[in-house]
Length: 195
Image (cartoon, rainbow, N blue to C red; front, side):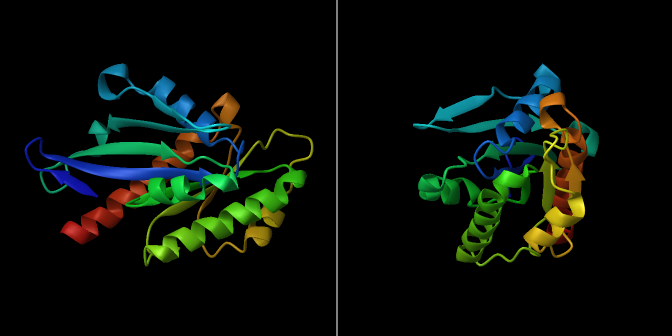
């Protein structure tokens, strides 16, 4: 959370985290395409060798003001490949909320588990527990014939009360449900902190 007193904006950072090709970028592209262009910034892509980090911000006017400040939401993705460890940690630093995107395909289990463990390790390096910030888990690619059952995915990740959402991000399904939940969680936490 960063407060710009001059503009009276409350800047909130939400990071989409997950394995490579799980749908993080697709989520941000869907959101960016549907947010009113007058209320959103440009979609910026920082390209790496085999992946990219996306970023844009938008004013969430319908949330109303928080302590007289207008919330401005900044959405980021992290590069999914494990050799971008330092970049993922850097993007995650200062996050107010996280959407962990899971590829539901059975053959992506190892990558999902590795990424989930990696998220926890990075948060711990910032002295943040999974229960300290809002984390939503999105089970993406639910339309795949080889999609694992949701209860099995929950068990596999050993989720500890994190809300879960089913999605087909490429079709926009579940994208805004997940976004709304993480934004609401972040705003509720911020309201408790600055009240």
